[in-house]
Length: 217
Image 1 (tube, rainbow, N blue to C red):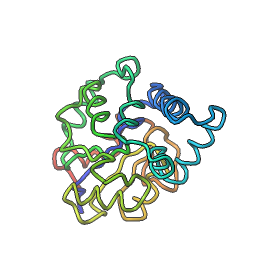
Image 2 (cartoon, helix red, strand yellow):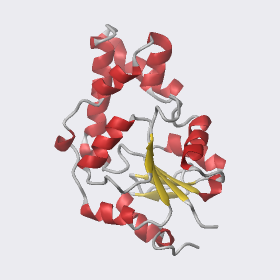
Image 3 (cartoon, rainbow, N blue to C red):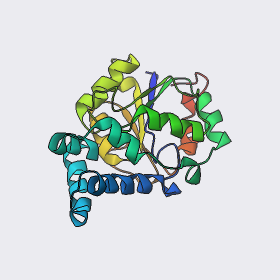
Image 4 (cartoon, rainbow, N blue to C red):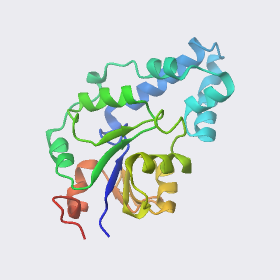
């Protein structure tokens, strides 16, 4: 059965994890916690990790325990000069445009950040849409409900016709259990969460040529 829908993670998937952008975002998260919430600076790293491990995102933990304003938080943590970290790859744009299935960004970040990243990577117009943290009602990967809501928004009911590309094994594992074909981006090493592992997203054509120009098996 051919795949009908591709879900692409955003950060550290559409651009190399070596860019430093995600590390900069994490630093902004920590700064928000000690500057805006007045949490003890020395406790912030462990607390942020606890929220991430427990709730899927730091934001979710901060919403539950500190009632933070999501708009303020998201604007703060993503307030970075993207051009200092990421750059367009003409080959990536051509590759994505050539894909036959429908293509969606599926991210735990917000739409504004996703739009800025796509613009910086020259990938505007390459996707059918963006499924962000607000669109899935502040659920987040790896919660099963996040994948269910993403599928509903993408108009697909059969998970076996979906492909998820993500740099996080934790985010891939539930999708694979649901029936997605899962692709781990950023390492060639096999992982139980992944149907396929790629060092870079640009390797997708050689790994799955059937996704281009209708040549699906």
